[in-house]
Length: 211
Image (tube, rainbow, N blue to C red; front, side, top):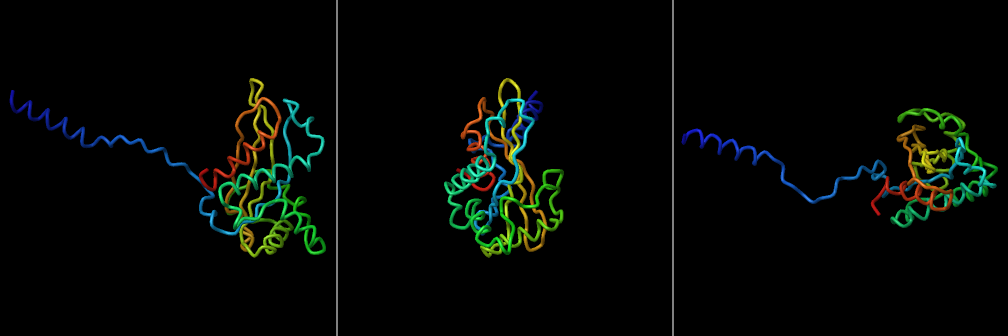
């Protein structure tokens, strides 16, 4: 019996040794834009608002331009709260700069970005005139990369709740290439309120840096 007991003990020891140690460390959060945190980035104004409106939310937005401008402000506030304001330039300032240079460039809130609402893959070429428009805007700040919030969609998630989904692309203005495409989803809400878009802005900032 003794050899059998020794073999069983050895097997139990090996199993314990191969088991990974338990840890209380939190899971690693994937932040696809983390490497951009220390660079000069232009965050362009949100371009479009859409949705099937089965919750009746769009009917409660009398001024779409003002609604999207408020979202730009919330994005700026969320990013500034993470310390990104020193190197990043946001929607309101980009819009003002474009209007001051209106002879040379398009209004930053009216870019030729309609085609980005469809299926777009990273490393795709940015088409003209959008490529020229983004290059001109980025050139105002001497940076290279722009984050373009293409579209905010309002979607019904059932049980009387809905979400806002922000489609964002990162553009390399020098190479005229899309470097990243992603969607930012708000927390589910039962009503249309500033909390809905604030949630989108917060989760957008989460893609770059931890709170």
